[in-house]
Length: 212
Image 1 (cartoon, rainbow, N blue to C red):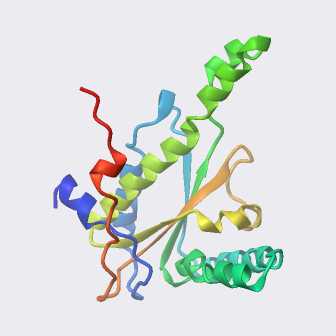
Image 2 (cartoon, rainbow, N blue to C red; image 1 turned 90 degrees about the vertical axis):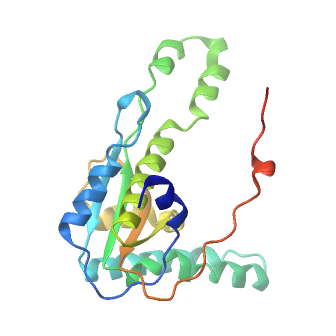
């Protein structure tokens, strides 16, 4: 499988067999993730790999509790019901043999250091921040991980929904420096034989502009 094939083959997998993920395959995926492009080469990522099924279940319970607490604020039953339907997507990692929690540390901007003393430069600083460089680096690293896992025959699901319980999850894990915060999760495992088709993407003419 070449890179192009891997891009088209990759899809979000939400059901997994009981088969374990081999340690050498995990390491291959993590090494590939760390080869991602990184703004100013800050490599602001950190990966917590969880294979302890009890801890994975605990994390799922934290997400469920937070989800239910948010649902209680819904203004009507229809909205509440719609939100509650998302819970199964936010907690699907409970059935995966591996959960990778992806963290990021703050992105240092020398431009902000230079300009922050200037009263009329706040707009420029906000424009620089709007690119969300820290998040872009994490996204690139995760995509490398997903494509490598696909190449090795594993299924993955890239998730940000569980972040509504990030503080509780961070407290449970408790292994990362205070300067890092949770950004996303990756569920990983051997996919069940029957998986849904990859959703159609928007036509190129709707998302691409050429300027000749």
